[in-house]
Structures are given as C-alpha cells and as structure tokens.
Length: 349
Image (tube, rainbow, N blue to C red; front, side):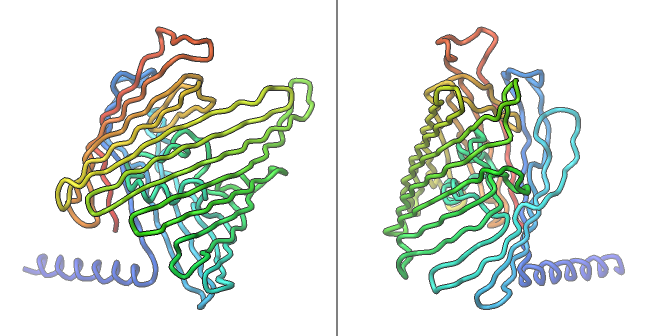
C-alpha cells in the first residue's frame, strides 16, 4: 500500500514538474529508429539495430514586450554506423530577437537557416528524413548572424527574411567571407505556400598546392510551391546551385523534389518524397543515409505515419537510393543501389 501511494505521489510530482517547465517555456522532443541497412555500398551492409538520432531541449523566454530569447540544446549521435557512439550535446540555437516594429523583428545569434526551415515544416517528417538541401549537405540548418524578418501586411500573406551570417553553421566564424541570405514567402490562403530563396556564400582560407589563395563562391536559387488541406498536402521544390572557383569552370547542379502526404484516417497518413539530381552530384553524405558522390542520384522515401498519441508517432518507412552514371557517362559495377528499412519513432515531452 505504501509503495503504491509513493508511486502515485511520484507520478503527481513529475506531472507537476513537466507542467511547470512547459509553462516556463521549456519544451523537448526526440526521435530515432530501428534501422536495417539492406543492399548498401559500405561495409555496414546488413547492419541493423536501434538508435536515438536527436534529442532537443528548448527554452524560450519573453524578456519584455519587444525582446525574446531562445536557447536550444541538441543531443545526437554521429550516425556513421561505426563503433558504438555516445550521444553528444551542443548548442543548436542561441539568439535574442527584438521587435522594432509591429510586424518586423531583428534576430541576433545562432538561428535557423532561411533555406529550408519553412519547407521542413511543410514536409512534416523531419524525424523520418531531412529536406533535400539538408540531406545532401548543400546548406547547413543553422548559421550565426544577424537577420531581419517580418511581414508586409497584417494578414502575413507576404513575409520576408534577410540574413548576414558567418556561413559556419552553429560554430563561431573564422571565414573572412560571409554569407548573405534572402527569402520571400507568399501564403495567399491557409492552403497555399509559395516561397523563393536566394543566397551567396564565400569560402576562403583555401590554398592550392603551391600555397596560392583560391577564391571559391557558391550561389543558390530555390523555389517551392505547396498546397495543403485536411486531406493531405503536396509540394514541389526546385534548387539550383552554382559553384565557382579560381582557375576552374563553374559547377552547376540541380535538385528536383516532390513531396506529399495523404490522410488515411484520423491518426494515420501515408507520406512519400522523391528527390532527383539529374547531374553527377558534387555533394557527399556520410551520416544516417550514406550516399556516394559523383553520380546522378534518385532518392525515394515512403511510409506511414501513425499518431498513437498527439505527442507520439510511429512511422515505418523505406528509403531507396538509386545511382546513375558518373561524369564519364558510366556506372561502375561496384556501385550498387542502397535500401533502408526503418521504423521511426518520434515523441514530445
């Protein structure tokens, strides 16, 4: 009887604690998988098991009517399928925002990238897989800099964001050449989202074999259009990147992506995404879903999302990576396609 009473008291205390934390602005969520690597180009072909990919702990605070701040910790494993890796923590977000006009704010610190934050929310399955620019490591999910964000009308149908940053992700800046980012988002109704994005990034501290500095720059253009309703959503995404480097011809790359979700029941929906890179990719990917560099690449993701609770989801899914020809117009016999079977879990707490 005493043990049962003690358990009830402990449960009540924990409930009150989490309620107090949520009221104070503390939130958290985590996700991971049971994964199975099938038909893979690496030595980890056939490997399977559980892992926790990400844990986020976020504290949001209103300093005043015009100042707000956020600190977010991310805890993750390296996702490289090698020897058992412990989960490590680092600061993911750390910024203060100032609302200098009713519809406009300035944000200083480590903050979300302008490149795919809104698209990621529309996709709705970041815990299953990253959006294309993030997945192929074309752009980082964070940068340290100064941004100005706002809307041109009270209904927030036309919004903007511009940013000047280190181009060093969540790390401090040692690159003399920085990044300039811009995003324009049009939401004429709750069903539609249309977005245009552009950035230009400079990369320095690079020298050739003789020690001569090399100038290297990248420019990215992106467009997105999506429609959503109670029955599901459909989105189209196009990205173009041009990389220029001293003494070399420009390298131009494209990514085409289509994503969708269809409501099957009150708590169940089917989702799918197809990413296509029609030219040999200059990008490599070595974590969670390792992919080869230098080949035309297609990625198909499909699964079922089952919300067994408003804050808990199970999502069985499959990921297929198909490699086409390389720059020489051939596909070596040693390069085979990759297949992943995952049961992804996501929960908030």
